[in-house]
Image (cartoon, rainbow, N blue to C red):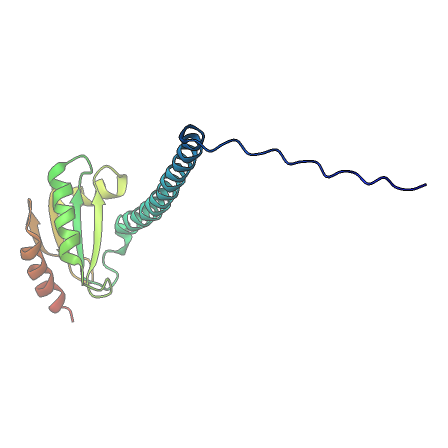
Length: 166
């Protein structure tokens, strides 16, 4: 028995291209590309934000370890109330003033008065919040700065303080 040859079927002609036919495709493509771009940017922001948040939490946890005071490194201790805007301003200025200092030459610790340890530290030294205490390598107070401070003034005070223990 012979095989019958099948006739090639004619391909359907594509619909005539008109501006109405092209518009939905372009709109869909544009919308897709726009959404894709937004998703990529969102992932980058969230990913970068989470890295920043983790770094900030680590820095804060290290800063609040008051057991580092008196461990052989001169230390700047901030008596800090997290709900106080003056404390937040002082902390910002202090952190900026400390940039460039090696933690091995000048350490920074935050005694948060909202915690048991920080509150006990502030009480033991008789200091209110919005205060910086400069502590020698053995943990004895050397100088006390009260109230808001300017980063340039702090930088000079910190440089002199650190130089005294080099």
